[in-house]
Structure formats: C-alpha cells, structure tokens
Image (cartoon, rainbow, N blue to C red):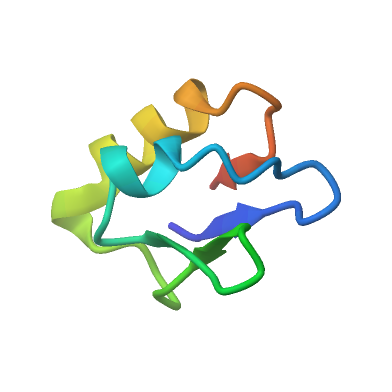
Length: 62
C-alpha cells in the first residue's frame, strides 16, 4: 500500500500527520509529505483514516 499527497490540493491543515504520524509529516513548505515508501501494515488503517479525514481530498492511499 502506498500513500500520496497532491501538493496542488493540500492546504496544510495538519490532520493527516495527527492521525497517522507513521506515514505523514508537515514539511517546511507547510504542506503534508509522505515519509515512507510503503505504508507499514500496522499503519494501514490509520493511513486510510487520514485519507478520509482530509478536508480537500488531497490524500490517496492505495
């Protein structure tokens, strides 16, 4: 499973790293960044929760 952040949509609200810090962090540019190549198995549910929590649908987890 991989996670993606659409930088054109991200508004830097910070929800995703608060829900799933194993996969997302806020970058110096104020936007969310994926910090792993593949979502760890034990973080898959949290990553999907982060996807659902994004207010602008900037996150995709597949």
